Image (cartoon, rainbow, N blue to C red; front, side, top):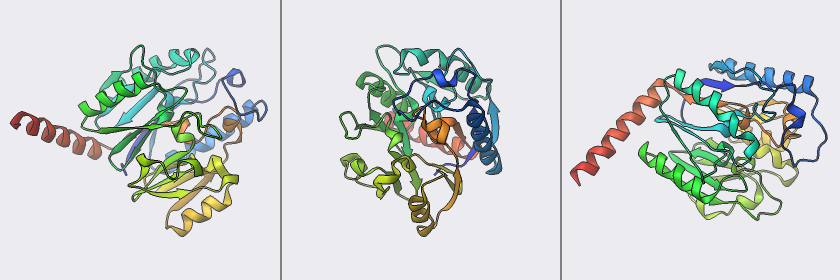
Length: 282
């Protein structure tokens, strides 16, 4: 697993409740959402990450879910083109922030669509979900960009699953150590065959969206079976309240863009040089 040292975050704006949702859990409480976001940011800071906060943007109700706007790797970032047209204006501020941080960026262009929530980096491989938000054209562009960064992209079809998944990471998270947390319907997916699947209880489906940040796995509060399972596997676990974000189809991974350490970036640059050298020799 990469070591993360910085995270781009953006609090929910006054228009948060007007965002896109299929959850049917009722309207979010903005005050509670802000408190939960602050607790999330404190947790990241407590794990050693420097926060890069963006101001809330009422023009884009979903903009607190910054993960959907970019795919960040140790070798550079790809600015996405979100599948929902109402969200495409969110990427500009994130692209500017990443460029200020010295991150090399590429971008997805029409007709491709990619949501960052459909992209999961697992032990050197990048899984790309083909969903209602990420189409084949976007996934193909992303895979090409990743290849240029020295990474391998693998497509994972999630359309038509029952119950449905909005994003790949709605039902899949990287735990490190060769393991992934998954909802039951992804447990036997061929693309995940080389990983050990930690299958969440059907009653705790939302627990599958967790985040490994350095030596700790951040999990959504209220899912004791999953937290206990991780504890038995030897992981350090920290639970955070996410109720107001689940009402808007969001989870823990959605709320930040985590940037790898300088050391990870150096290793990836060296890896890219090795690949280019081998291609030249061939």
